[in-house]
Image 1 (cartoon, one colour):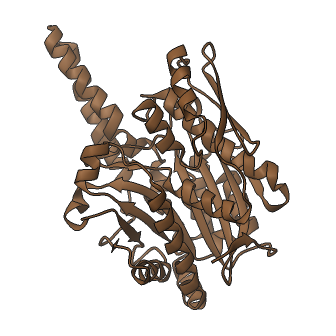
Image 2: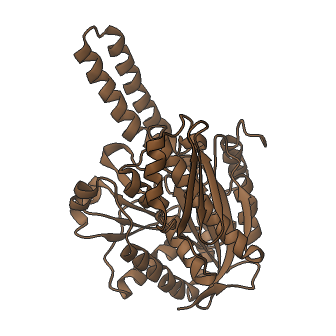
Length: 418
C-alpha cells in the first residue's frame, strides 16, 4: 500500500512513535531497544518523502563533549556528553559512517558495544540523540511544507517532536515522531512519550487533532522475563487496558497481525493505572540505595567496599531506568507506555530469552521494521471500518482537561515555561 503526504490538516486516526534515548534497562531483568517506535514511524514517513538517512559525517570535540552527525540527506543533529569525549570514542564513532540513522540505538550498540542510561554511558547517549535529531532535521530540510516541529521543554530535555499528516490507504493519519532525550547524555527523559499532550508537544497534538484521535503508539522491542513462557520467537505485542485505553484500536492491531500471519501476544491487564505505582517503585529503589550507603559507611575492607560499589552500580544501570524515565503523577495518568486515556493502543514486540542471552540488548533488524510497518498499514485498513466505534470509546474514557493541565504543570516544573 502506498504511503504519501496528505493534503488534510488533520487525520482521521493517529500514529505515534518515539525514541527513549538510552532507556535500555528496568527492574526485574527488563531490557529493550527503545528506538523502535522512532525507527518504524520514520521509515513510514520516508515512504512518503524519500530522503537519504545514511550517516555522512560524525564530528566530535573532546574538550566540550559535543558530537555532530550529518546525514546524506542534508540534516544534522548535535548533542553533548557531560563528561567529554575521548579521541578513542571519536574513532569508534567513525564506524557509523554509511549506516542508516533510522535506528539510532541499534547503531550505537553496534559501534560502542553497549548502551546505558541514567548518566552511566553518556557518549553513546549523546550519539543517539544527535543521530535521531539528524533524522528529524533531514525531513524538515527536504519537506518543510509538510511538517510541524517543536522542541521539547521539560527540564533537562534535549528532545523534540515532528508532526505531519500521512495518507495511509484510505486513511489520513496524524503522525508524530518524538525524541525523548536527557541533556548531556543522561537520558531517558520521557514525560512526553507516547501521545502525552504536555507542553509544546501538546500544542502540536492539538493542531493535528491527536489529543482526540484513535491512535496507534509504536513501542520498543524488549525482553520481558515475565512473558518468556509465551514468547517462542520474536513476537508482536498488543497492549490496551480494558478500562482505560482504546481496545477497538487494540483489536484492529491484533487482527491485522493475525491476518498477516505474524505471531502476536496480548498480555493481561496491561497499563493498569495503579495510582502511586511509580512513586512506590522509586521509594523502594531509594531505600536500597540508602541501605547501600549506610553499609558503605560501615565498611572497612576493600572487598566490602567494592562489593557494595558493584551493587550500587547495578542498581543505577538497571533498576533506576525503570523509575527515572517519567514523573510519578504523569505515570499515574498515562502509565509506562504514555497512553492518553481513551485514545490509544500500543504495538511493540518481545524477544525470546535466547535472543536476550545472545545480544544482551535487543537489536532492531529490517525484518522487524517490515513486520511492524505491514501490521500498522493493515491495522489502519481495519480501523477505517470501526472509526465511529473507536471514537465513541475514546469519548467515554477521556480524562478530564484539568487533570491533563495538572500533570503538565508537574512535568514542566522548573522549566522556562513553568
